[in-house]
Image (tube, rainbow, N blue to C red; front, side):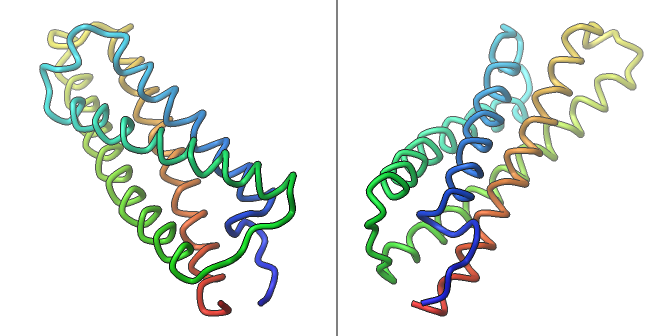
Length: 152
């Protein structure tokens, strides 16, 4: 088996998961600190997806930390396949949520501020940006594990 930097159980994977957890948590917080986010389905979708991504990332963050400190993680093909599929599905969902949130926020900003005050729209834009960063790290993790998968 070859060593793939960023693959499951490595320190680079730990850094990817940590970043993914931080960005998805901040996206969720920026979105849900407002009372009116439930008025738009794209914003509700982002909150739902981030609610799925955060536990997934934290669980794999703990497993990566255990693997780094113990240095004994059996690479089983079935385990890597589950992580690969989970990363792929959540990566697609995160991209869809980030794009829909960004487009609705852009539409609200272009409506001359009548639907969205400036401070509120800034938080929505920041939440969408954090979701895009979370997607980028999730897709990177998927690609690294996809690279590892054939060598098992």
